[in-house]
Amino acid sequence: MKLISNLFVFLLLGALSAVSFASGFNDNYVEFGHTKDTATDLNKGFIIRGSHQFKNTVIITGGYHITDNDASYEREFYELGFGKNISMNDKSDITLQTSTHYFNGEYTPPSLSTENSQANFHSVSVGVRGLLTGTTRASVSYTNQISCGTSMNDNFLTLKVVRDLTQNFHLVAEAIELTNNNKTNSLNILLRHSF
Image (cartoon, rainbow, N blue to C red):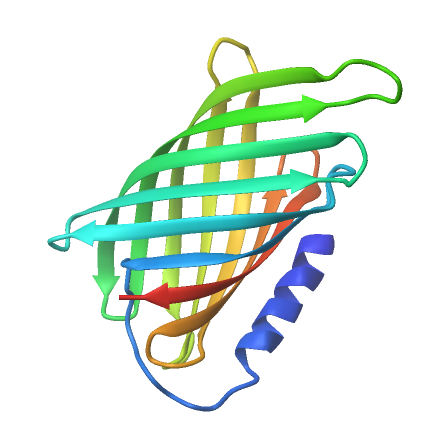
């Protein structure tokens, strides 16, 4: 399975450094980087996301990413979400999140006028995250996403590895698989700054 080979690469990235800076989880961060959509011809893009935890209870998340294929199609996604983490022990959490997503796509076929498409989605996610080492954290989550106004219903499996570079900077590798058709939807490499 393609996702398993990608996970192996991410875990290998996490094992490259032996320096220990921090332990535990920090949900106060901003991250940005490159996204690659492998399920379609939309092959590159930019992503920026952030998260803030209020008094160790509710987490608010937000994000934006854009992808295009240098030819005829561009997609933008905006996201706003709320979450809660439930501690299982000092090295693992259960993660819960609900989000609203806004999609805007622009397609320009050769010698035709530009076509726009827009959609709203709601999603619910449940996952588990844990400390692999003092400097490496991993998580897996399952997301159900429903399109507003249509019968479209997608399910995603997300695998993420976070590796400390310094106390406040981290490398994030993420693979998202659309489980409905068993194709990897996107691969993201991000730099995270925690507060």
